[in-house]
Length: 282
Image (cartoon, rainbow, N blue to C red):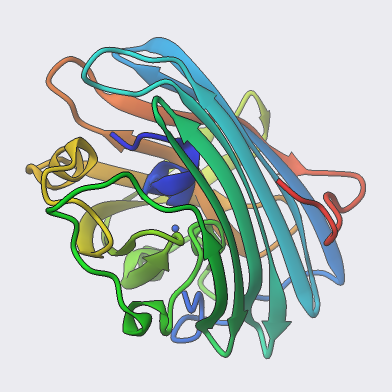
């Protein structure tokens, strides 16, 4: 599993990783003039709680902002102890999400990753990122890998379109760049099911199969890479964020021989006022 909340689809939608240019080839996102939302998640392995995460944000007629933070406690061979936070802002243009700025900071074991990215027309125009740990088997990352990508957090926002919760939400490839690694999340439809949070949303969710495809910046011997590509069954349930026609992860599950790794929403609802502001920093 991912070493930190902030570098995987679990934060990226992980993949989970669980997370382009979002919606540039997708259905349009239609939202009220300004809609705030908040989600809280538990993270468990074999039903044993090992962490938590929160996501807050607002989506308006012409801009969006979303923040996420989380923490995990180490569980041998499955999850590294760590914590992270991310904030992404961008424009909603003709019903499509266009990221403009992304910042994150995450720590796990002996590795710290701090990232600041700005975007222009779907490309990373400026990047500041801490150097990765040394590794001779690291796949070279080039400028080309920064083109037509989404940050891991903006990748969590999937326009529902006119069909609402439907198979179409899962028919897409999400090109993600987290400041250090470039990877694709290949989504495919599995089913529609009913979900219910302790607070907030209760209703249908689109369940997608998620395949992690590393492209550049990763180490070939990485335990994370092995976990995500070794025949792992990863699925992500997408549900509407309160007050919007935008889908986001309600649950992410990855199979593991010692017990499934599950990130599950306990709160998934609209807030009284939009939060946080565009000036928020992780």
